[in-house]
Amino acid sequence: MEQQINSSANSAYICVRALEDGVNIIGMTRGRETRLQHTEILNAGEVLIAQFTDNISAMKIRGKAIIYTSNGEVPCGR
Image (cartoon, rainbow, N blue to C red; front, top):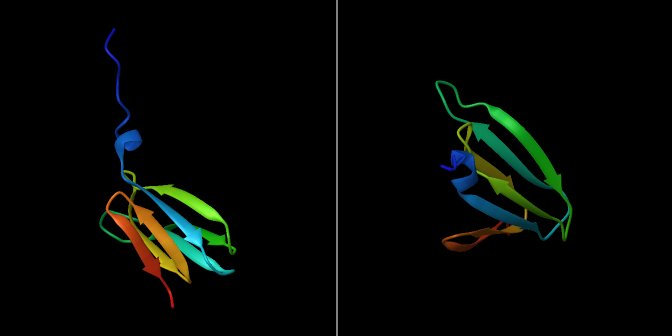
């Protein structure tokens, strides 16, 4: 039996660990217009695992956090 693979299941993931209260994560859509799709606010110690999909092509992260990707760690904030 042939198995279908959901393309979004193979999309890139990132993990964001908040180092302070109030870290904002904003998912942005792709297409003719870039629009805000979803917003999350994390407090210190909270972790969000996010996935890039057919609709989400960019994420904006504001605040002191560490972003974990398949390419390594990226510090965010001061």
